[in-house]
Image 1 (tube, rainbow, N blue to C red):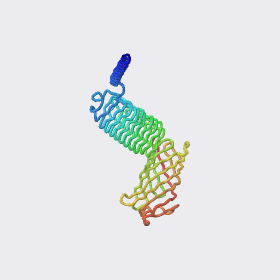
Image 2: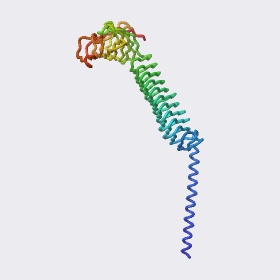
Image 3: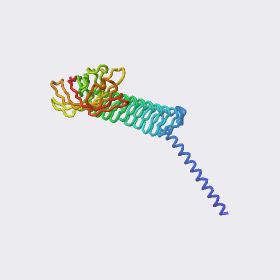
Image 4: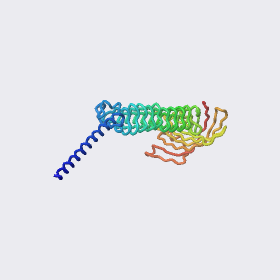
Length: 358
């Protein structure tokens, strides 16, 4: 009898234990659900708003993970956000946001944004990578795009296949065509660089209030007269020019572009080195191309006028009769395509005058 009472007591104790455990578990789950709806990060998985686990409440939720086949909407993101088309985040985002087409962040983006076409955000200190365009009103991070970056004050890096636009820049702008900014404490590298003031600009056309701009006339050993535009800073400058050859009968229209550097500069004297490529064309058939390294002393005869001239070493290739006749003495020359194409190195010179515009 005593044995039976002992077994009954054990069953009652065991039953009470499991009931208590179940009540505690239910209470814990309810507490977690309530806490999650009270502002703790969610996990959102779905197709497109509102067809997701967060439903119609998604625009008010903060998520630590979001995955949407098409597009997702949230108040904020704190982890990984992935959408096949677009992520729409009304406030701020941290972590990693990836979208097939676009990411849109209403306030700060302080993580990494990756989109096939467009990233747009108010501000941020992270990284934005887009196949087409990055747009921010005040971004201090890194922007990389295939076509356009538009930001506020940049303190890191802008890289674009075509155009970068920024306010003040403390870092690096690199563009395939145009960089434009206000005050640049760093480097602009592009075909055209524009700034109110700039530390260093490397491009064919460089415009800044503290830089140099000059128009010039040059002539070389081939009797090619060039009208040139030289722009740049204290050390590096760009060169672009167009002209006419007075020696050829048919190939007469000339062009050139390149970079130069003030190797040594005092009050009225400078030693400049230039690396320039160009050619002479008839725009009908055939071609003549020349690449030159020039070393040219320059003398400033007035505050605005400078004369210069010096030797050059040149590499040329041509497939025209006029091109072959331009030079008779080569350091080294050779032919290809059964003698139709001529290649060679030779010494030459360039001399000219330039007038400072500012």
